[in-house]
Length: 347
Image (cartoon, rainbow, N blue to C red; front, side, top):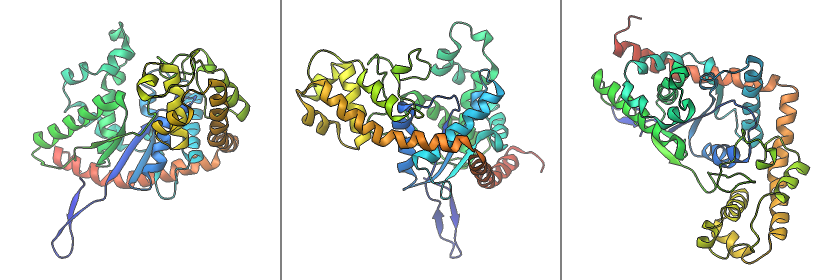
């Protein structure tokens, strides 16, 4: 999938696949964010043209302290860089720096239907019982997500379970725009990129709950900014059951804390879960945790140290964002020019 153009011989050429993905600057990036998203971003840059966006417009759908929002935006960018995303070959930028996102979101506000947005489970979850007190931005959030993706005619989007509904709506909006304005195939229908193992990392204190920055216990998560001692201590204290390590995948699935730690080990070591289960079947958790903590420190401690270095003098981070925004705008501007012409805006 991709845009087509004609070369000098009149033959159609297909643009290379383009990936868009965004991360909210909400602070406290943790192991779940790394294994579920950022680690995969690093791998994707080897195969695709990628745009990695810090979605600060999305963040303000709920109140943000301005100074904290700026710091968190830099911290997410620093994490991208520390984990190995190359700003010279890929585009890293903050959403608010490219006007196309907000412009296209408004047009999509006029394309999407109220009924579509009313069915979005994320709005229901975040708004809770007091929907009338939620911001309009929170309700229309999926239209901005669609604009993020389609402003660059992105062909692929990395998705987890909680984002599939937003991508489906993005495809619906693209189809309706194309149909409403008699512009067949103007916007592509982005495809999901399904993530690898351990995309859903659970709490170290409760194998039935997703690892979260909002958990009251800091021991429930490993933050990307944690040092080696903290990482090792949190893994040693991770909740387990009294039995030895499971001997099969079926047994692991029935034991959520053991299953979570096995998944984390597999993802950090880039090995199949089956190999980890076979290696440690019947072993006590004490030895397994020691090996897991050594592995986690080896992988994560350098990332935390590099984030700290970049945040101590953020000029480089700011330059990466400015350069990325300029490159992103250069891609989005011709798309928006075409959108305005199609809609009937005088330029």
